[in-house]
Each structure stands twice: as C-alpha cells, then as structure tokens.
Amino acid sequence: MAWVWRFETADGTETAPAVEPEEFSTQGDAESWIGEVWKDLLDGGAEQVTLFEDGTEIYSMSLRAAAES
Image 1 (tube, rainbow, N blue to C red):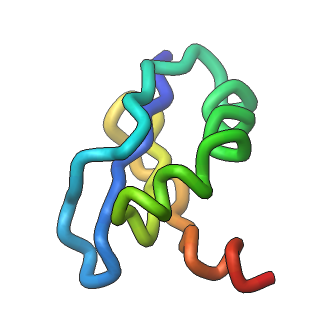
Image 2: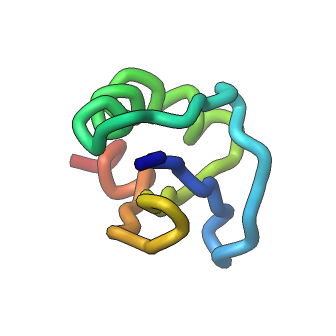
C-alpha cells in the first residue's frame, strides 16, 4: 500500500509542495511527516492537503487552520 499527499492552494488547485514528499508505507508515517513539515508547506503556498491510500481519498485538512490554532 502507498500513502501519498496531494497539495492544494486555498481554491483547491493542485500545487507543487515546498518540501518534496515520498511515498509512505503507512498512514502513521505519512501523518508524522506532515506534522513535521506543515509550516514549510504553508509558507510555500499549500493551504490544504489531501491524503490518499492507493489512489483512494482518505481525508483532507487545512494547513491554515493548523496555523491558527
């Protein structure tokens, strides 16, 4: 199984990430990575991210909301 992130601007347009991700073998690894680099991604123009497992959307979340909390 491969877990991957998609990076999007505020209007949902896909964008290139400021930090290049890898394919993750577990959901936990993918979530740990996003927890470490979300500020860099936000600074680089990504406002939200979506996690996929083998092409199936699992969930989306706002990086902006994380910065405001």
